[in-house]
Picture 1 (cartoon, one colour):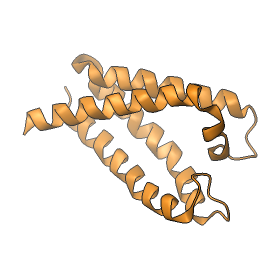
Picture 2: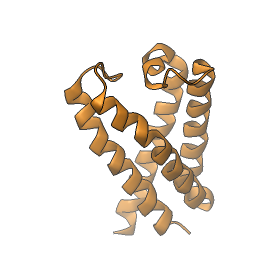
Picture 3: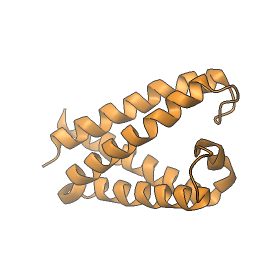
Length: 122
């Protein structure tokens, strides 16, 4: 069973690295996700992309996997209100209410994965 979680950890890390890179490649896609009351929208998007990339890299390295997973756990908890807000928004940032409703449970899945990987890592 441990090998399964190692594979999940590495795949999750690769996904996070990819998602972090997308913050730079598709800045316009992420702009609606940043609440309008926050200043420096692009800086927030770039910073979260850098954090996702760094934490993803940490999760690939067994020595730092626990810390990377904990960072991802915190990041996913910080992003959670944005996804809840999107479900109830008149015009969801993700595009539609159906997609927002699908995305919210995925956020909880990511929180669970990060917590479990942290728990299993050395």
